[in-house]
Length: 436
Image 1 (cartoon, rainbow, N blue to C red):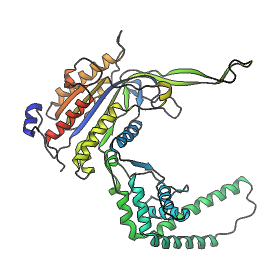
Image 2: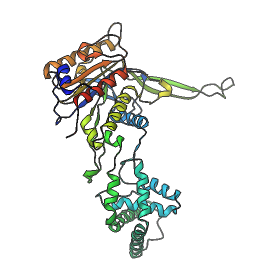
Image 3: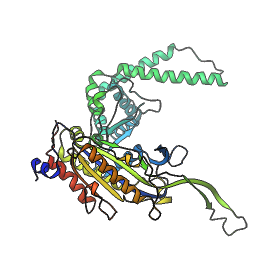
Image 4: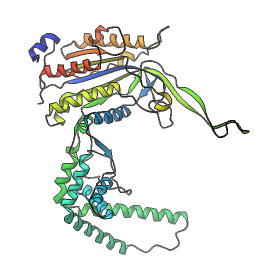
C-alpha cells in the first residue's frame, strides 16, 4: 500500500487527520424527452439560475432513489415512517397478542421516550416521521414483550383516568344535525384525542425511557449516510455524511407540451369513433449538471469507527449516484441514460460544487447540442478553481464517462466506473484516514 508520504509526493497533498476528507462527485448527464421530477401541478420542476429558467432535479428526489439503491446493494434498510406503532403492533399480533392490546402497547412505548412533542396522531401512527433501522421495529416488539406487565399497568391507569374524565363531561344535546353542532362535536373529539395523548404521556413508565431512547438512537449504514433529525432529542439526530445538490440544466430550458389520446380498443372499428381519453403532459429535454459530496470522516464516526462498512457505503453511494435513474414516467419516456462525464475528487480541505461553471447558460453548438459547451465550461471552471485555491487540498481527481476526449483540468481519464471507484478508495486508503 502507498504510504502517506508517497501520496504527498505524487499528489501534492498534505493530510491532516484532524481535517475532514470529502469525496466530490460531479456529473454531466443528458436526458431525452422526459419528466423526471414533477411539481405539484405535474409539470417538470424548474429553477431560475443565471437569470434564466433551468430544468431542476430536486435533491430530495435524488437522495430518496439513491438511498433505496444503496440499501439494496448493502442489504440493509432504514424506514422513514409514521407507522412505527402499527408495524410494531403487527409483529406483536403475529406473536399471539390481541390486536388492540398490541397497538396500545406500541403507542405507549412512543410516549415512554418522553421526548417533548413526540406522540401519537389520531390515525394511530406517530405525529412525526421517524427514520429508523428496520431492525428497530423488532427491537420495539421485543421490549414490549419484556415489559408487557408494566405497560399493561400503565395502560390500565390511562383507561381509568380517561373514563373518569368522560363521566365529568356535560351530556351532548341529541340535536346535533346542523353544521355548527357537528363542527363543535368534531372539535370536542379532537380535544379528547389530545387529552388522551397527554394522559398516556403522564402515565408512560419513566423506567423505560432509556430503553426506548436507545432504539430511537440506533443507526445502520443508511442512517449513517443520509442522517436523521428528531426535534427535542439531540442524541437521536445524526449529521448525514451525504450531501446532494439540486441538479440543474447547464442551459436555458423550455417546457414542452405533449397532447395525447388513448384509443378505446372496444370502440375501434365500430360505428362510434373517437378517443377514450385525451389530455396533455409536460416534458423537457436537457443536459444536467449534478453534484453530490460524501464526508468520509462523518461517515466513519456515524458508524462508530467501522471503516470497512464505511468503505462499502462509499462505494455503493458513488455507484448509485452515478447510475441510478430517476424513474418518474419511466414507462412513457425510458430516459435510462448514463452520464457523459463523471468527475470525482477526494479533497482534504472542503467540498467544492462546480455549478458556477454554468451561471452563464451554455449555448448550443451549431452541430452537437449542449454537451460540447457543457464539458468545456466544466473543465474551464475546474481549472480556475485550481488556480484560485491551489491543489494542496486535493488528494485525487480523475474523470471517466461516455466522452472520448481527455479533459486535463479534470485529472486523468480512467477507463470506466470500476476504475474510478478504485481510485477513490485507494486515495482514501493512501491518506491513512482515521477519525479524531
